[in-house]
Image 1 (spheres, helix red, strand yellow):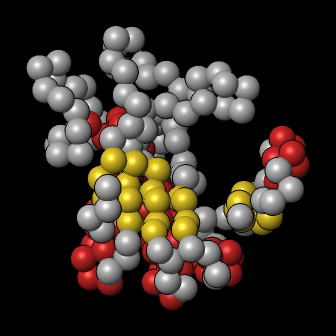
Image 2: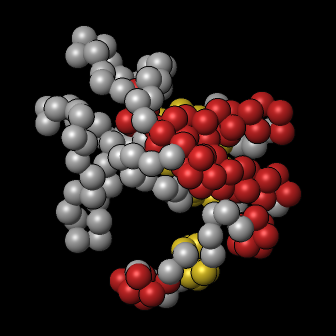
Length: 173
């Protein structure tokens, strides 16, 4: 198992897992990504820039261009599955009378959400045009190793629980 991170020193808890090879790198470094993917059966893409505000260009460079670096790498070094971690925030404020599932339309409200949607669309294109086997997951929150909630939405009500929403662009369940 390999884990790519910009700053390995900021994740000292990973040393508890001797089977993880930690690689220093950045999603915007196409050569580094290509090297990291070689020989992998599965790639989990959880990298991205998250903020509540900022210039669209900054989000697009990391979340879309970085995703394309990964897509190019998995085309060259074929993998069994690319798993992309997106965000449930793409749906916007949900209709309380509608189930939020993989068919729910996206209504991004900020530059971060738009960039994540553009990354998803790029993955769908690579799947259709180059056969990249991909699974897109739209989780609502992550738990840190200390099991504390990593993110709580300032927009969604507390009663809205979003475990995850999955869309497989390769038809897997």
